[in-house]
Image 1 (tube, one colour):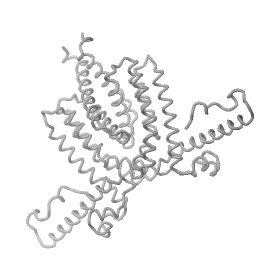
Image 2 (cartoon, chains in turn red, green):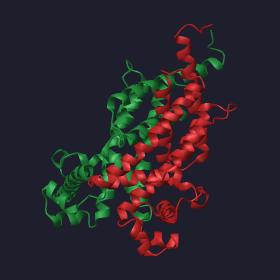
Image 3 (spheres, chains in turn cyan, green):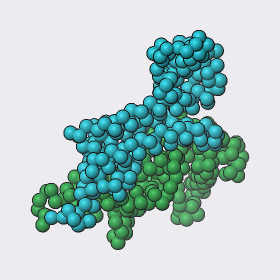
Length: 229
Length: 229
């Protein structure tokens, strides 16, 4: 949907070759701007009202655009919903990748991983994605698109953190399993928040999770021999 | 909704005192039987179609009863849905309590806990409950009832397993946190199943989770001193 190229405003794109070329680019950039404006508004509406309460009319209102302009870019509600999720998952992917690539060496890598996962799984957008997948269990089309978006955005995040764990000295044979369990806890506690919201207890649990992972890594190191004693 | 009393068929309830008494009991028992029949059918429909696809007409069909009989017991769709969740959560609570109270001493208590949690969180009914809570974010009535059902059925399960962990020698100051993290992982991996269903990998992850918890318990024991060496 969005390439890095389209993030550059047309004015900075170097010297125009010819007038029609400029116009084509300007129009494409305008179209991209409009789409982003619609998607940012749709993300807000989705975040407040979830899937069931998502109204396309509210999106045009929040975006401050005409209904026609919105329908031109996203003719159906499902198209808009799918594009919105792709948009917010893309943004989350970019942020997570950046965090995994630039970890603060003064802090525990496991804490950093948990913080990043918490920001994603505790966001309303993750819950909206779950909502859509569960609500559309009998309508495969939207459901499959949402699953593809989530897979496409989350697998690179897991890879980036897998590399970060390895770079921080976590044994390569333990890293994938640890990563999956730690993400599993964050996902599971995000869901528990619906029943019983207690951020302070979550803090304690995440600290305990980090300690469990550290104890496991240490125990595995010892049972392998060379570093013993 | 159901007391243990109502599970005893009327014929075995001892000698009747008087005819009106018998008739009252028989009628109450019949009514209970009918309700249970409707709720068992509704649980099947809910399990297949989720919240969005839940049709009350299909429930009467599956239960093999008249629409009128169903409406007599559950006048609205929401009432039927709430009663169905209460029914399946009640059943799950009874099973989990029994498992926690009668653990096999030959097996690792943490494995038994994970198995019990897996049966619950990996069931379709748990996902339907999540579905309802997410879908009804802007309709507080049903949502709150579902949250109450879940809390009412899950807190006693957590208490029962907390006692079982303590009885198995897990230090009392670690048990609640461990329990919550372990349930968190199972809940989180249950959700992941929607994106990426791989039961064999789940088996490996749950074994690793048990080992992490064991390593943590051992490390905590050592750091406290007396058992060292």
